[in-house]
Structures are given as structure tokens and as C-alpha cells.
Amino acid sequence: MLELLGGLQEVEDAAKHLVDHYQKTYELTFTLWGDRNKTFLILLAVVGTAPLITFPALGTRSLVLLYLGHMLGLNENDLRLLQDGFPFGILQAIILFAVLYLTINLYHRDRYVLRNYAYLSALEAEIRQTLALAAAAVAFTRESTFYWGQRDFLAGAVRYVYIVLLAGLLFSFLSALIIADWRSGNHLLSLVDIVFTVPTLVFVFGCARSTISIDRKHANAAGPVHVARD
Image (cartoon, rainbow, N blue to C red):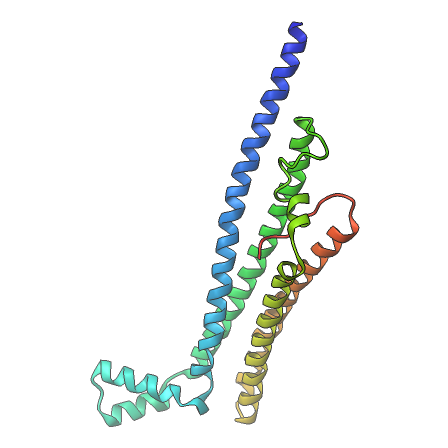
């Protein structure tokens, strides 16, 4: 009798530790999910505003310099010297570096979130086994079978829409920048553009590949595999 009670106590303790670990992991993953989405929005904002600085034909550079001249109290001659000597090429390289950094950061955060949700899905199976829950029970299926059973077509397509929009926006901006710099005769700056463009698009492709591979694993695997919230 004592052995039976001791065994039940061990099972109860194991279940308690598993549930606590599950909850803490979920809270951490949810925080990372929010951080990933913020990174995505910041990247969109940077790419959306970058053409105002990188494309001289838009005339925004002159407005920026006029604003700086007004803030610094420069006269017309000083303002002309500032416009002729301002290192817009360096500023453009800094913007491209920021785009690359945010893209890499987005990839890492996205992979971490995907991995954590897959871990939560596997952890749910262990908790259900420890608690000896019936197969029809819905408890501890939130991040696995219940999620996949409730996800409709449009919910599953959200991630793909985001990725296509981001890839299209980045490709349009970066390719137009390379072409504009090349046609202006600034071949060195065009080379710098290419150096930043290639890894940026590679990591965007990595995000897309992760999403597709996770969906395929879920479609083909016998057990539940989870994809992060969109």
C-alpha cells in the first residue's frame, strides 16, 4: 500500500513539474512571438522609408538637407557645400546594413518561435501520457492537435502572404537600388548594394523554407507538429 501511494506521489510530482515547465515555456514563447512580430514591423518601416533617402530622383535628400541647414542655421553657401559633400553613399550602406540585420534577426526569432511551439506540442504528448488522459480528451492539446484541427485555410495562408509581401518588397527595393546606382555610373556603390542584397534575400528565403518544411512535416507525420502563430 505504501509503495502504491509512493508511486502515485511520484506521478503527481512529475506531472506538476511538467505542467509548470510547459506553462513557463509557453509564456516565454508568447513573448518571443510578440518580439518577432515587432521585428517584422520595424523591418517593413525601414524598407518603406529607405527609398526616400536612397533614391535622389525623389527629391527627399534636398528636403532633409534643407531641414538640417535650418536646424544648424546654415546660409545658402554652407548648405550647398553640405549637399555636395554629404556622404549619402555611406548613409545608404548603413541603411542596407540595418535591413540585413533586421532580416537576420527576423529569421532567428522566427526559427526560435517555430522550434518552441514544436517543443510545446511534443511536451503536451508527454503530459497527457503522464496524466493517463483518454485519447478523446482535449486537455493539453492547445498547441498540437486542437490547434491544427481548428486552423482553417485562410489562417494557414497568413504566413505565406506575409512572406510573399516581404520578399516582394525587399526584392523590388534592392533591385531598383542596384539598377539606379549602376545607371548613375556609381559601380562601386552598386557592388556594395549586391553584397548586402544577396544575404538579405537568402535569409528571407530561409524564413519561407522554414514555414513550408514545418507544414509538410505536419501533413506527413503521424504525430502533431506545431507552427507558430501568425
